[in-house]
Length: 400
Image (tube, rainbow, N blue to C red; front, top):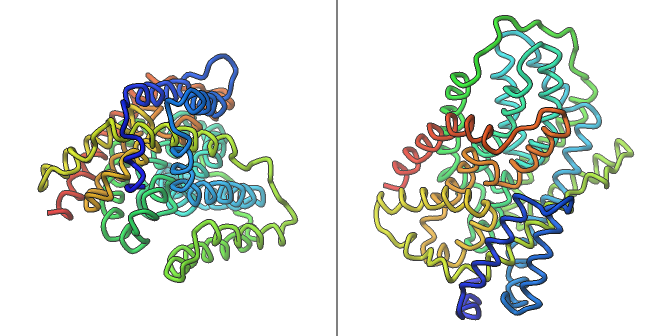
């Protein structure tokens, strides 16, 4: 993408305006128009009136093609596993007693790491709300777990977040790099986030133990898929096999066993939204001068980059925040971890910071437990700030 940035070096004020409008209609769609169509309309109009060059779409598609392919395969894969009762059976293993919330916290972290944050939000939020009603627990307390872990635990593997996949290809970073450079900070954020969550949501006096037992057949059917993904995402990467191909093979095998293909669950809307915002972000990138921020030296530069990434994610959503950072990251590749950790964990503070949190808000409204942006922030800041500080401390140590 670096070699193509020069084509956008024209007056960029209107390109920045187009990006802002795209983000605004994503957060507050006009009327009953889906956010994906509203953002796509902004991008199309911007191209038609030549505010955004058509080549920006080509560059965005090049950057997002493999990440979006993984999203379009991973969510249906997770839905098939959910249909056979795999996630419900995993939840049943920890369903009861005073450690229920900790067990669900770990489960949400694992699903985020392996299947990606969107799958975790879509599948686990309804499940956790049902568990809350079954135990007489606070539905909001349990439902917040997948929303939080979608941010806190999403920098462990490349597949955990679309932002990771967007950066991984152009910057040639691999699973081992994530495990060494980013995973320790993500783990620290997840652990600290747990203790902050415990302080935020008082535990019930008594949680009755459920008499529901795990479906052993579902566990035995789903376990090989999980093992395949773990092996495929690591070994396959070394062999040049993209993550979406690994997930597609798993989906094909699982569909062959279950005879179920949940094509309606394919997340076309989020994919269109990501591509529209990505197009606007590519065009606006030169006007943001992110290279100056990433060029700061030492630990101070790491801290400034991390803080800028957190701010950028919450101002424009984390996916376009990464896309606009790519040209500067190719000049300063050592700053990629501060950027990814900032844009991935930052959305704990504000609901518009990630597509997953917007998806979570929509899911909660459908379940009869609407959560306003203000309510999300009131809880998210209490948990997200300690988690962000923990991640920044670990990352600063690694970068020193």
